[in-house]
Image (cartoon, rainbow, N blue to C red; front, side):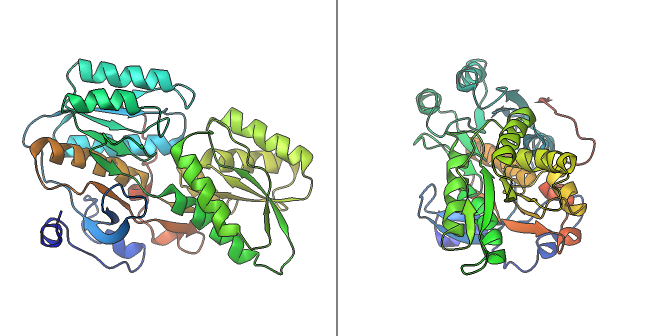
Length: 359
């Protein structure tokens, strides 16, 4: 997309404050402060600020299939809210499939195959593995079905568009927060680090960002503890680290880790001694920041990522202008700016239950 087309398609906006991103009618989520990567899909691509605006309506009732790794935590519930609401707003048919967890790559592959076989016209995927879907996506692309990479990151050359943020930046933002509190020369602090399921692209990226950010500071990161983002799996990892590290100062990791840690630390009487950070936002993390139990977390506006992915799918199906690599602008949320952020853009509303179909 050339510069003039880009300017016609999007209105470039300047970032001011988190509140300034959401100016406009409260019922409307756009324009939303985002970043486009150019050239699209390039690891070293340049990020350009823009205000994202979707199509007003789909030209016809397209059939879109959405594949999630799971719906076990509030993060994917937020993405679900985004894809469901945008499908309704645009007037398309949409089905959400849940693979049940990051160990179920085979199930996700078969669900995608089934979707295309039944006639889905576009596929939106929150990938279990960055490389594990390459063969199935080659088959999907050969059938001229657009593939949108949502949230997690896919390395396949057969992806048509990406709606995601840099999890490197998410991890880096969290590490940077810690490093600023404990710069080189200050007393060393031990951090238990729980990046998520081994092998997932977003986990590897967040881990690298976090480690790069704390390099040269007084932050001593223990050996990372990888595990599925279920509460039981994360709780066991936290308990094991606390058992072996009586002088632990921080627990940092996934939102599930952070939410589980607050309960474990309170039960052990360690909530004043060990502080908690998440490298992404969920309702539980938001609530934890409100209550002073979680220090901070970057927000990647997962609801908006879901909305953008559906809009990208419709644009590709209709042959309309599409920004192929875009994601919301990341910002860190703590007690200082919590009240200035429009919650419904970054989290599912209270009481929202998983929805699997829009007819």
